[in-house]
Amino acid sequence: MRVKLRHNEDSVELIFESETDEERRGLIYNHDTWKDLSAKHPNTKLQLSVDKVKKSRTLDQNAFMWKLLHIYASEVNGDRFSKYDVEELYVTQLRKYSTPQQLLILQSATDEFVRKLEPRWYRVKGYTQGKDDKPYVYLEVYPGSSKFDTKEMTVLIDGLLDDMQSDGIDTSEVIKMTKEWKQYKELANEKHNSNK
Image (tube, rainbow, N blue to C red; front, side):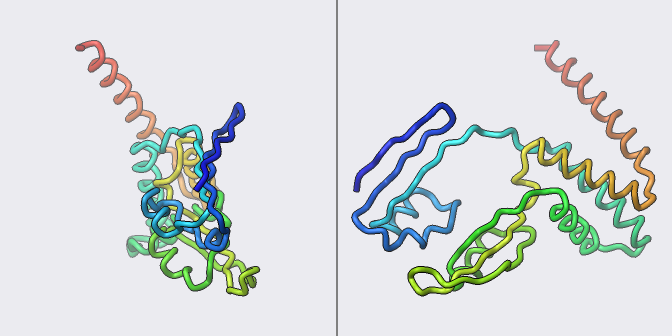
């Protein structure tokens, strides 16, 4: 096996080359460890990318989003709303305000892939025959908001607020409470930092 290093101002790539490319198409899990990938694909060219780390969404953003979803479900369905209603609204918001991943995987690996990835929502977009004469599936996958950075989460929350307001739901009280909570946290952090 050979290792090549390619880089430019924006990225670095390590390329692992093998003598055959037969197993390349089998690489579908981006969450396997390097050891797992190497064991599964001993004669396969593997690529490692290094990207700038984004700041993940905050717990406050997450709590605010779920509070809004509960209010939305309550207003739309009355007092009889369920956890299912909240989850359904959540998936609807993800589909409207986040970017799906487009994936092509072996049809025989679809169930295991979805089980391991645990996306919030996915759908089959189509089928194709690979050069290896095996059937492949085009998937559209929406990961949950736990994978979002702060910017993506802001887009999701802003979209949720817009939808609530367009459905006639008053969000002013929730926004007011959120502002008060942020001010309280800022004061608490300042007090904590001054005591160090």
